[in-house]
Image 1 (cartoon, rainbow, N blue to C red):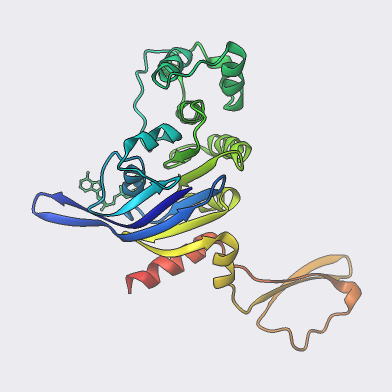
Image 2: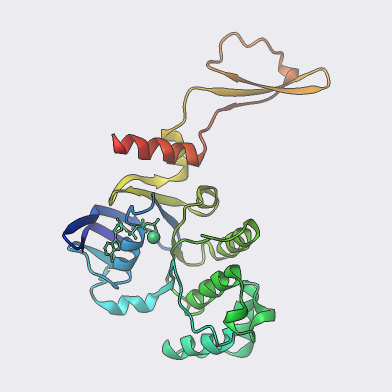
Length: 278
Ligand SMILES: Nc1ncnc2c1ncn2[C@@H]1O[C@H](COP(=O)(O)OP(=O)(O)OP(=O)(O)O)[C@@H](O)[C@H]1O
Ligand SMILES: [Mg+2]
C-alpha cells in the first residue's frame, strides 16, 4: 500500500550540505506493521515527513495505493503521531479531539468516541485539560488523535521515547491491539519493542537501507554456530554453551532443551551499524 522509491534528500545548514537520504527504497503491505529503525540522524523522520508530503524529496517518489504523495490528498488516509507533538494544552482532550473530527468532517457518536478513549486508557481523563496530562498520557492522546480519523496508514514517529517502563508497556499494548487492523509504520529506538510489534522492518544508516526484511530473516542472517544446551543434573538445571554438537555426553532423559544461540536485536543492530561505518 506504501511504496518509497529511491528517495534522496539534502538539507543545507549554512554552507554545510547534509545528505539525509541517499536512495532509500522500501514497500509496506496493507495491514502490515512495519518499523524504520536506525541511529540518530539516520533519516527516519525525514522519510516520514516525505511520506506525509510535509517536505519533498530532491529525487525519487512515494506512492500510497499507487497515488503519488505529491498529490497531498493522500494525507487524508494517514493518521500521524509526531515525534514532538504540539497541542494547545489549555484545552481538554475531548475539546481538542472534536476539533480534529471537524477538520476531517467526521461525525462519531458519544459511545464511539468513548470507545476510542477507552482503547488508549484515557476514558477517565476526557474532560481533563491536556496541561494536566503526564508525558505517557500525552503520547496516548497522540495515538488517539491519529487513529480516530480511521486511517489506512498509521504513522507513529518515536513510539515510546522518553516514557518510563509502564508508559512504554501501555503504548505497546495499544499498538498490539491495532496490529492487523490497519497499516502501521513506526520508528523506535527500543529494539525489544520493535521485535514485539513489527512484521517487517527497514534498518537505515546514513540515509540508506542496510537491511530490509522480516525479523526472522534478520535473525537468520545473524544466527551463528553456537548452541545452548539445557539439561538436568540431579535436582539441578544446568546450561552450557557449545561450539558444535559433536561429543555431547548427555543422555536423552537429562536433556531439557537444545537451541541455537541467537543474537539479540541490540547485538545485531550494533554489528550492522559498525560494519557500515568501516
Ligand atoms: N530541517 C533540517 N535542516 C537541516 N538538517 C536537518 C533538518 N532536518 C534533519 N536534518 C538532518 O538530517 C539528518 C537526518 O535527520 P532525521 O531527523 O531524519 O533523523 P532521524 O533518523 O529521525 O534521527 P533521530 O533518531 O534523532 O530522530 C540529520 O543529520 C539531521 O541533522
Ligand atoms: Mg527522528
